[in-house]
Length: 169
Image 1 (cartoon, rainbow, N blue to C red):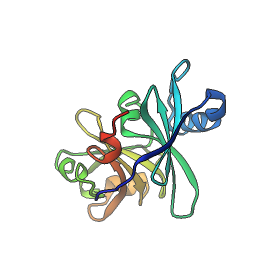
Image 2: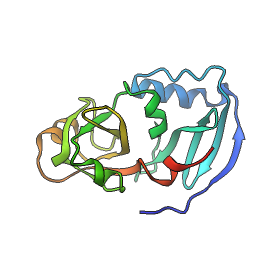
Image 3: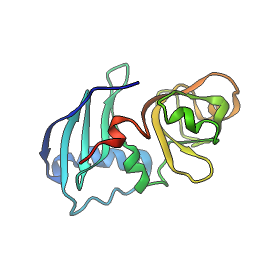
Image 4: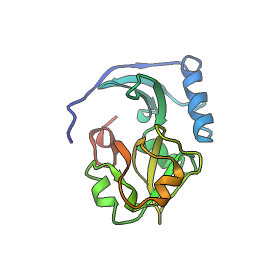
C-alpha cells in the first residue's frame, strides 16, 4: 500500500500553541514527552497533521471514520517512549506481514494493554524486544485481542518501512 503523500506547510510553533495537544497525548499514553527546549514544528502529511520535535516526526493527528480527531505518537515517537500505554504485543510470525502494511490478525497477538477498547488507536510491538512495529485502529477490545484466534484485530495505519517511517527531516 503506497501513499503519495508529501510534507506540506511546515512551520515552527511555540510550545504553548500545541500544549493542549501534547497534554492529551501524554495523558492518553501515560508518558512525559519531555519537549521543553526542543525545536517544535507542525506540518501536514496527506490528511494528517504532524508534530516534529527537533526535525523528527514524533506525533500525528488523525481522524477516525466518524471524523473525530485523535493525536498519537508515530513509530519514531514510540522508540523514545516504549513504556507508553495502548500497546499490543505480537509474535515473530506477524512481523513480516506488519512490515508490509498488513492489518494485524488476532492469531499473532499474545498480549495487550487492558485499557484498549474498540476504536482506540494502538501501537503494535514485538513481544521479545518491545520495539514498535505499527500503529492502527483496534477493531476489538483487549480481552478479545488476546483470547480470540480468528479475525482482524487492528487496521494498520502506519508501519515500519512506510513513507512516514522513511521520511527525511
